[in-house]
Image: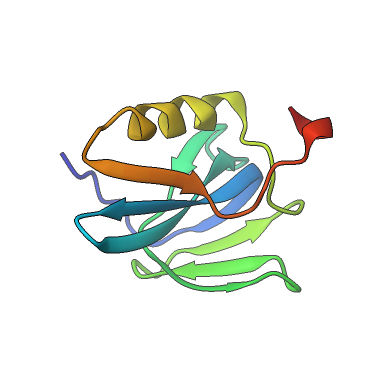
Length: 103
């Protein structure tokens, strides 16, 4: 079930880019803690990401601003990652490595 949200301006912390590979197709989505919603958020497909400006734009038109660099996921977002990773049909990874000091 796909629940689409209207384009939004999201401030995110404790985040990373999730890379999902399914049947040879690769998509990338922002996953982290939405300061606005005070809950996890997973985006639609990333259209662009500017690490210097700490901003991203998704195919749905949502704008994401990031409080810090990508890294360890917020515990609420980690639950989503773990559920995605449990599917045998997909390969799920984080685009940016998490340093050992963050684990």
